[in-house]
Amino acid sequence: MAQKLLKYELVKRLLQLKEKQDLLTVQMQLLTREISELAAPFMPIVPKDKSVITTRLVTQVLKESQGVWLMRDEGKMFHSSANESELTEKE
Image (cartoon, rainbow, N blue to C red; front, side, top):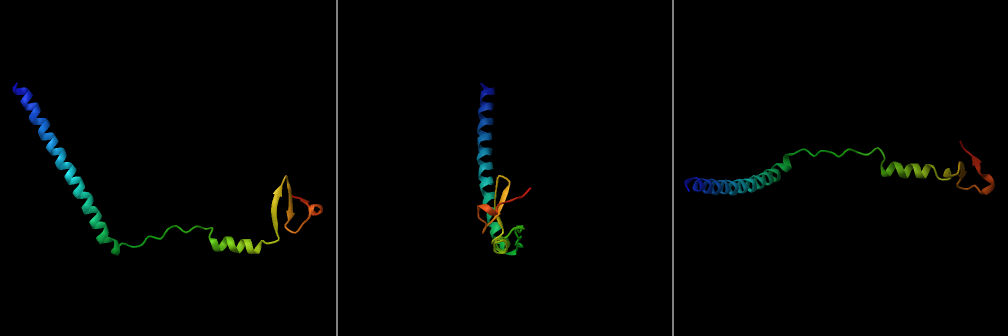
């Protein structure tokens, strides 16, 4: 009987420790959030990696390539102003 009481007390103590651990975890999360909010104005802004392909570059290429080869179909390419008889073979 004494052994069962010890197990009961052990389980009770473990449950109390688990509750304290949960409470401490919540407090740590709140403190972490508060510290982050307070430190944010002092943190350097990390620039995002800039893409090599930008909207400006795409626009420039599209403007410069108007009237140039637009489509490729079964090994044949044609100029945007070409008609069926002006198809040329490109390898």
